[in-house]
Image 1 (cartoon, helix red, strand yellow):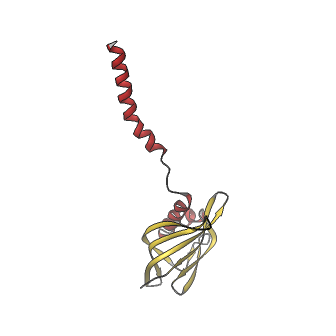
Image 2 (cartoon, one colour):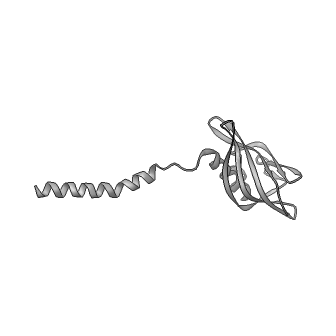
Image 3 (cartoon, one colour):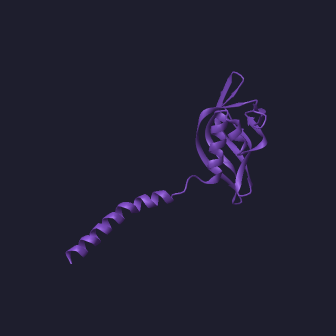
Length: 141
């Protein structure tokens, strides 16, 4: 009888110790729109063109303040550069449909000028995933 109780106690103790680990393994990562935006911003800031192509349209229009620039990942060409870090990502929706991600703070370099401010990364849903189609930011120098 004592052996049966000891076995139950050991089983419960082991089960309780493993339960949190199993729950941790099942927690999902960021939503796909946030993951796409993070990948885009990190690859743009680090000029990792091949990785960037996987999450963008062929050409991405970038509006920074009054200026409009083009980002062409396939040609490895950008008239404006993203300066890392960025912070504060949140999903934007219209009528329940995801249209983009708001970025609380991001910085851009155009020539020798650096500008910083909040922005938006425009997304298009495609085959269950997202692609970046545009970026717009209001900035202060």
